[in-house]
Image (cartoon, rainbow, N blue to C red; front, side, top):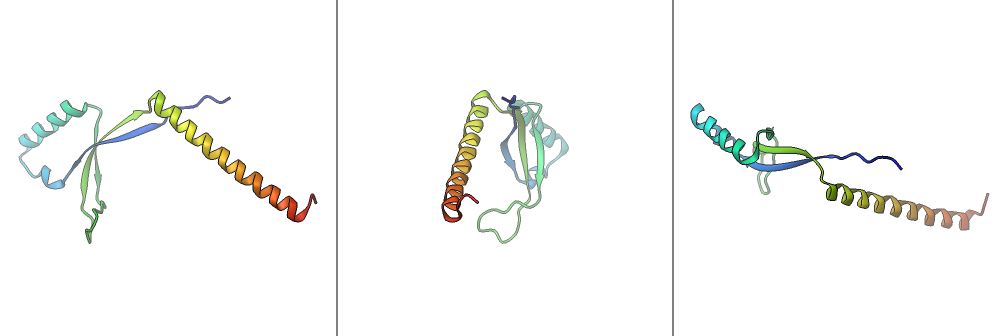
Length: 108
């Protein structure tokens, strides 16, 4: 059995509209300090210039406060169970198809 590795999980902590950065640098520094206190020093600000909100006719650029972490034991176990179920379903589907074709064309 192969050793499974943990995947990186992305958590979006906050959506930030670009206009929230339209302030003095001191106010922005205070806001960033609040985000660091609330979400931790390892969070990142990411820019998405093409976010489409429902019913909008054009994209609305957005910043995201995101955190990246390794998946937990339970998340990893769930992911592996879902993967195994998918693989088993594909194998069963292929086996049924093989039996159907074997019946139709014989063991040639």
